[in-house]
View (cartoon, rainbow, N blue to C red):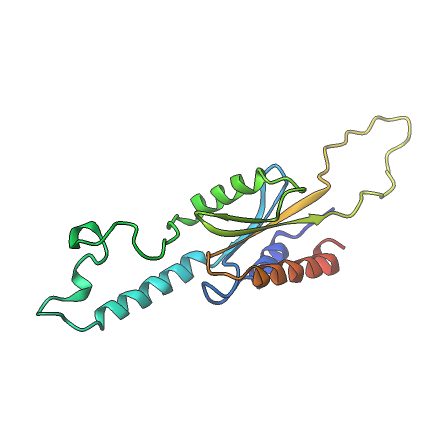
Length: 187
């Protein structure tokens, strides 16, 4: 089977969400043992937009008794608050480390387990993508031995969203990718 890396990247990019909580921000296509075939992410871009928006909100916050709200640490142990108070944020990792970690987590998944995983990186949806059978007749003469590599029977689509991303949004994006796969890449 011949798969165009450019087309695969385009198809993965097309299912990514334009906003951080509206759907998956990262999509990977891997072999079941965790080897990466293709990836697409908007995580860094969306993370930067969200951080920029929070910085603007802090800059526009009113001063209290002459102290700037944006200049101090709020909710931390330094100002009397408990550490870990409020909503727990997902850790920021640079793209290569994040993708490597996602591949490692996905490689431990078994097909008979739940496809939904909640972890420190947010929500993961793991969807098996079946491959067409290699039923093409061999062009080698019958009396010569043919070397056959191990051909995987499926790929795994890994969608990563924030903890606020709805499972239904991620499932619909996975179905959208499967339709594109069946009509294009995998056909």
